[in-house]
Image (tube, rainbow, N blue to C red; front, side, top):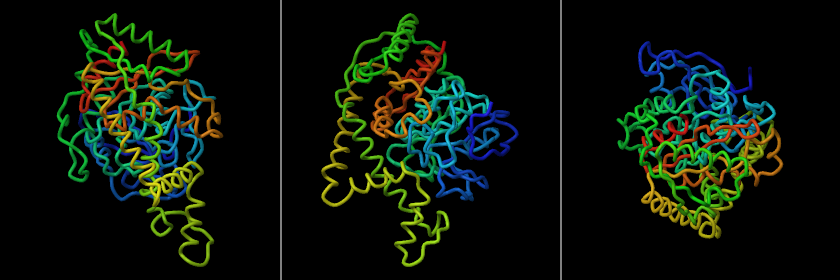
Length: 423
């Protein structure tokens, strides 16, 4: 079954021996691969071939993994459905009339369809966890600083992390072990958690585990999603976990704060695509400004243009304090709320996505609907915490994801709890 998960198919052999020997891995197409086209799902980079590997790719190859291709994605990571790609949409292997989620939809679809054993995605506001939930696989968003971003084409530097997708919690944890750890080429990485044995935490032992349930992340979710979520909570309690409600009052501002910050950082990061070093050839004549404008008009899709314009506006003179500074204040408030909630619980639990997978084309005419669907995932990125999405059964035949959030560098806690959900 082909669901158009890949933009470029290839075979790059890793080392002969290692913890991932004989495993095939698919790489999201915003992660640099030496000698293999890396497009970010955009016409702007349709012919770009990096001369170097990202740190995570180096580590995967060193662990024996075989790269089988670069996966489709929302253009520059901007989307929740993998429909904004310049190379067309990816379809959900569970139901081909539905989206696979985004922006790492190609990676999740490749794993769900059996076209790769495991995959890498990047998560700026839920872009690993959303497609994991929609495609019925496991996805981990690591703590900010646990995994090197060297070689990841930047969208929003202060938010994004590379994370694994896999059929099972243990397999995802094995990949995380390989890619985690400090990197001299990424000053944001930290030594914390670098030597942790994540896979061994997938033992399903949740006896006495305290699970906090933020009521704000349940309200407004689709009733079918809530039903599966509550049934999964009951399963955890039956295995010895304890659950109680916690409150995150600041999350009502999370989506607004996230999009102001993410779009502002994107407008700065994407300024490099100016037609001099990257971009399609155009027939523009005249001064440099005209050429610059034409390249960006032809090279970027509608969603990327929308986010650049909004981000530039938020950073402009007279509006910086009104929008960007306030969004950063909201981010600090949100982190404080998470710290307080995690002081009362070992992990927090919520539905990964408040809705079931969209039908193809459903959200393209209403970007706001797409933005609001990120309500349960973006708070984690703003707070720089780890989270995992694990399958929690199906509703009307469609996958539902169960999200577990841990304290900073508490990946072992969320892996353990997720493995109990899986069991």
